[in-house]
Structure formats: C-alpha cells, structure tokens
Length: 216
Image (cartoon, rainbow, N blue to C red):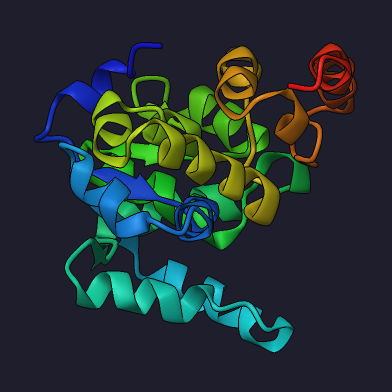
C-alpha cells in the first residue's frame, strides 16, 4: 500500500493527537518508527495534559511522551492566536459538532501551520473534512504503514508493532486499511484485536481454522 502524498514531503510536519501518541507508545518501538519517518512529528501542548489524566488509571503514556520529547523525537508546540480561534470553533457547540480538546488542538495547529493532522476518530475526521476541506488528514495506521518504517523495523517486528498497537491501545483502523492490516498480522492475531470490527474478527478467525487443522 502506498503512503499518502503528505508522507512523501518531508517538509510537512505531522501533528499527533493523543490517540496517535498512545498508539505509537503501544508499539514498543516508537523511537524507531518516528526516526524512520521523513516528516517530523509534533504535538500541541494540550496533549501532555490529556495524557496526564491517565495516571490515575496507571497508564504510563504521559511519562513515555516526556521521554520521547526529551530524546527529540516529538516536539511540543503551542497554538498562536489563529490556532486558538480555530480551537474555540471546534470545542464550542453541540456535542455532535464539537471535539475534545486534544483533537481540536491538533486540527487547529495543523490549520495554523499548514501541517497534516493525525486523527484516528471518525467524528474528528468528518468535522475536519467539513470545516477544513483543504487540510491534510491521515491516521496512525497511515504512519505505521509508511515503507520506511517497514524497512527500518524488518518484517516480523513491523507486524508485531502493528499488532501491539491494535491489542494494547485499541488503535482505530479505517475500512481502507482492513485488508492490509489483517494480512500483515495474520488472521489469528486479527481475531484478538477489539478495535477491528467484529465481522472482520470473526471472518479472520474462520479463515485461520484451516491452517490450524493442517497443523500450521
């Protein structure tokens, strides 16, 4: 699968939402993935605060993000006045037309700087497409499927990283990626991933039965 055009221009920064940071951390090899990408990754200064709320549930994401920032893998960036105007437009209103702070800040910064937003939620993608139709949007899966990530990790670690993000972070997968993801991680592991639609998990599990029966 070819990477989105945005990922072929190294001058365009990628703006990571909280879910993207969590997914990358869950792979167990976030530094290797990030350094393989031609684009730099940034996160708005709202994101560390969002991740910090998970400490009470024992989630280590805030500390892991701090480590990535300290190592220079992710840069924390602020919104300017234009960004804050976009942010307010995205968080004020009825529930069906507003986003949480992290998604709103991610889209606002991408709009502010002409960057690409990494958004994994369908609602965020829909609202972004409606209000900012010229803005580039990709998902964490798009990032992970970049050919340079695959080359750097190697085939087995690459598949393991995607499986770990699906299993441990419940990484969202859009329909355009279902076939590729299942093919990469295999049907047996696909059946263990709660973020994949149930119909796909059931289908994957059924397709794995002949291999088991053959002793594969």
